Length: 295
Ligand code: ADP
Image (cartoon, protein in one colour):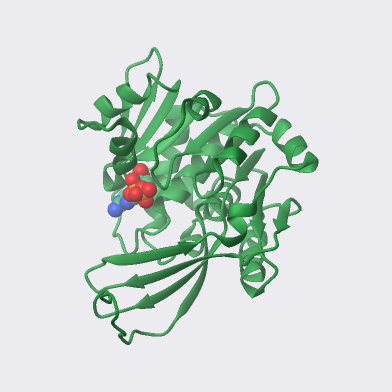
């Protein structure tokens, strides 16, 4: 069982000829309204691509955006009985996409900033195998989720968007999942992925650093770091690759796989996600992941 504690956003996406400058109005393409947010994306991935019983603990608003997100979560098989409604608009990301792939993004956290843990949520976390959180929700909720764990529950943090972590948050997590950029941000150092992982292992007992098409590096205290190669695919849209990776990694760990095996499945899932447009809409099925991983 996986409990994802995190954000849900509606992504409002417009293709533009170039990013607008301050004070400027430009015309773009048709508006797209996609279910997103790191928490909801990872929950969809854990359930659909990871095949784990998955609960999404998050906060939506009382608006149409909430319905869009609930539909996407439920279609993937995510349990939404602990997905609440806060007295604020559903989190929204305003995104422009330029032809060269350069994006501008403004996030209005809305309901995500109001997420709280109540008794029912705490009880579900206590009974989980893996709890997976990110940094688009208040840090106090991450602390609370970690504190609510029963014995043997693994606390995984995808430290995205990158921000410096207080000591007590480092102490609250068992597994850190970051991309290279976030690893540099957290260590304030330069180096190879293996070197960055070694530095992060001074703070946490297991680390996974994702490397885009290059796969990932897995590092556990007391063992040599391991490089898991990426799967070669034709990339169409890299949105959601990292979230798909995190969700599948958590699901595979919840099913009892070793970290390196879980990371290989997560790499296969991330690779499939980049072959399709969107975030939640790009998440593959568990059968597709198994087929690619078997190659
Ligand atoms: P993020 O989206 O957080 O920046 P990455 O770009 O590192 O994360 O992607 C996460 C994972 O998705 C990678 O570890 C890899 O397994 C997979 N992936 C991402 N981009 C590609 C690609 N172009 N080809 C194959 N796999 C990819």
